[in-house]
Amino acid sequence: MAELQSAGDIKTEYLAQMRSKRVMNLILLLVFVALMLAGFQTANDRNAGGFWDGLPNIFDFPADVIGEAIARAPLLPGYFVKYFPSLIETINIAGAATLLGAMIGLVMSLLVTRGLAPVPWLVGPLRRILDILRAVPEIVIALVLIFLLGGGPVPAMIAIALHTVGALGKLFSEVNENASLKPIEGLASVGAGWVQRMWLGVVPQVAPNYLSYALLRFEINIRASAILGFVGAGGIGYDLRNTMSWGQGKFDEAAAIFLLLFGTIVVVDQVSSFLRNRLTHGAKNQEAHP
Image 1: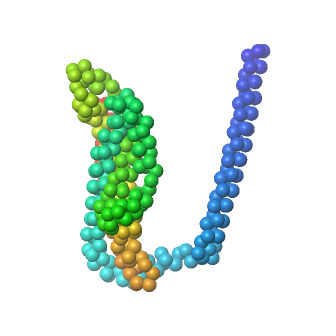
Image 2: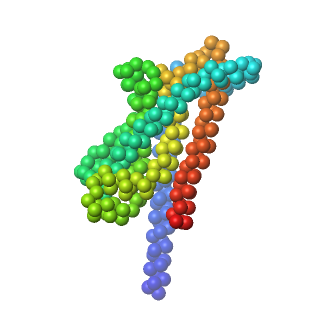
Image 3: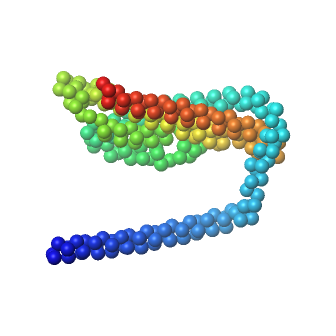
């Protein structure tokens, strides 16, 4: 009887906790909706035109771009050739930023991984640095660098690289935490230094994951480098900003740039997805069939 009563008490307590949780979730949802509505109303009041007044015209711009692109379809191949160098510049910005950010992020990840860091008291401060690099948007960093260095691809590359350091440093450190310590202990027993233990004991274990995350970040950085072009950081985004201005009659060129950028992102996404699958699943298959 005592066991039945105990089970009944547990069930009653569980149901009470579930009801309390549902009430709390409902309150949080109502608060969230209220904040969203208040924020939207504030933004609408401060907007130059008004959201509801402009809502019926939301499809005007896409319609003009598509209409001009269809009307001047024979000119699109020429536009592809014209803006292809800018596309290559955008890819180069993303590639250089990813490579630089991945290398620095790798070193930072080893310095902030507990159990691997050579200076344990530096783990906290370095993690906060990675948090700051991830928190500040690339466009903010790029605007500051453009003010200091002038427009061009270099500020964009540095801005994206800094953000990549914060993102990959965090991801790489999480991968490092799953690495086996046995190779590190073996290297330490024969007198290997910290750099040798990391390079020979940790990196070979997690290299496929490193490359997988770096490829994923490369996809993101292509989009970021195109966006930074809107603030004068070079690449195809700068050309897209110029062609999208109203009244210039260049919407067909904007459509060509959209198609170039879309095709590039699709190709890079497919290639990097294939390589990531080969790296991760290939490594697992080798472990399963030594």
